[in-house]
Image 1: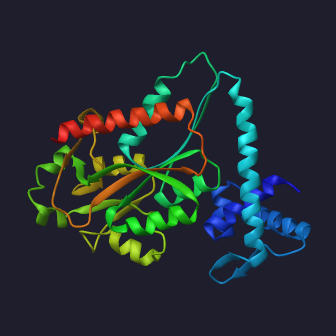
Image 2 (image 1 turned 180 degrees about the horizontal axis):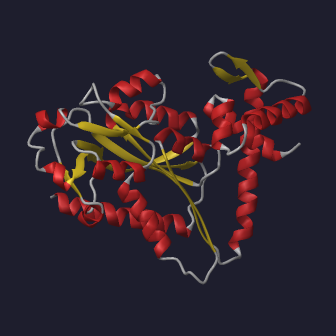
Image 3 (image 1 turned 180 degrees about the vertical axis):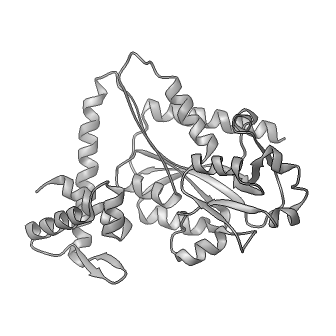
Length: 307
């Protein structure tokens, strides 16, 4: 029995879709379907029931997936033993898309000894994916962002995934736009006439896709530009007139780098929270602690500028 097939099955369960799981695993959908069927043939029972809405674990499938996750977690711990007696500089991190978090990861990378062994695994994605990546064991540490309005949904989901959580930062979203656009952003009414740039794949546990999309367009309910990575968002802020994003507060040096400015407006339901998630029993490495220290330093520096 190939443990790689365990990873495939866990990813299918996490996404509820063989097509999406195949995309996440960077493989063809037919190959993933074949691997799952081979695994089911080996086991002698169906792991998933195929429905019109996707795939759902069967009763035995749920039990198998629980065991598979434990096996994968144990394998990861065994592999980690090989690094304990080496000089690897390593960090396994998955984060919500955020400038200050990415800056901390970059600062961590910049402090590594280039002559030593380096193993960095850093991914930016949406909040639900961050939780899933940590729960599956693909990444050791995650930073999740959600609106305070949705805190119950996220904390319930994190608990369902049997993860531990450490609250990190609570803040009001800032209106971020190019410097040339800010001259026309006089008040909240003017902001409502502008076009928001938002991440199109953001989701909220236990809410439908339509409900999430309707919220994502606020405050301009009849227009939005959807993007899927920070680099595209930054390009659009620079190139598209009358656009803005709601983001976490940022250092002035980071804003200057991209020709941006920030301003705080009284926007309903835009209080956000960043939390750190990890598997229960996870042992923080020196690298994990160093990253969190850098994250705290940047957060504290930003908070000083806001006073």
